[in-house]
Image (cartoon, rainbow over all chains, first blue to last red; front, side, top):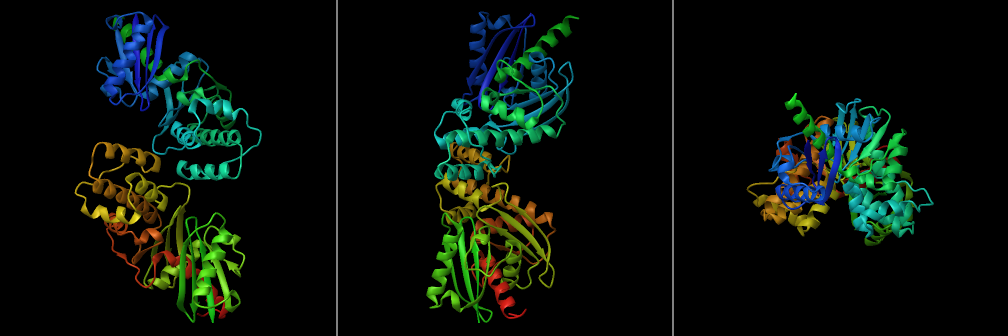
Length: 261
Length: 263
């Protein structure tokens, strides 16, 4: 049985192909101008990587903000459900999922099967999302992917007093002008984003274990900061960015086995 | 008897000198890196224009976010109190004051004697503050004045999905790429400002008359949008520049105290 999940986010598009409960292939691409194009491109690459044909996929579930535009999917599923499902498949002890994406953040409480019990979502404020990191990386002229390593070299503890991205950007520029080390500034930034995400998560009562997903989880500095802010054991997953697509592919597998029963 | 008020804000610093209850001089400058430098400069300018020195000033009150750093003041008074005081002097019938600063916004309600009944401030989020307008003006490559005026010509103002300055900025860029008329974007920006401000104002309960203080009060596009949002007429301040309200309030507090309670 081969199923697929396709997650069309605001900044990236992800796809996962599963065969009999094992992951055959996954891909992440930068989102193209139209969600349809992103979906077709990312799925084509994943199919190629898996060494199968598009026709081999028995069922495909779409998710993410662009899910309605995925031309080849069989049914859509909410991002929340997919993230919960994917996280428990990756880390069976996970009961709280904190997902920080490029333009949103969510915290989800799940049962042992990955069913969603409660969730909370922020897409109204850029603080606490990946966009915060991106804007600061831009204004400091450093690469987003390097931020984790840079913050690892921090030696002095700084704290940002502003939570708003717009105000924090100004504050960070003043810190640079005061001669503060970039590593210390980035470390303070990670703590600020993590605090914001953790306070979102506390709204649904964080239950251990927690797992961090979404593209921002690839940043080791953010992972450490979030673990500290949450105060519970936080798990890493191998590829945090494809978690939603993985959940979608698992739902697709349910559909097939459900229809066969 | 001379009294003075000095309001050191995040973006601008203001000084007012009063003589026997009348404003004889006022100055507004862009704030410097350090609040005390702003205070020294703006007050120095005001004094020299009327040929006075600090020793001629019987009492001086400081306000604004940098008030504790001003070297020459006799006393620091909160912005809320000074804005309420200043607004009432500018518009004696005022009951609700909406003040939009460069990095914050506040709404306050006064009773018929000018006592503070209720107030609310936002300095945590750039949305609804002067900063929001500034960011948008920069993206649109307009001056703040142009941004305000332009919205009058709009037929179909855009709307924003979220109040967040960061997301709204991304929306504006998208609309520019989609070749949406710039006046429709400008009107959308002013409406977004108004909607955020009215949420704040409605929180403390709106009571007539309503007036606006702070630099944004000079922006007609925003004031008109806010009037529409609130469904209430906003009294225009004509007696002095509405941006001076805090400094005027500070000067009034100084004069009162110097005079044993009366101006």
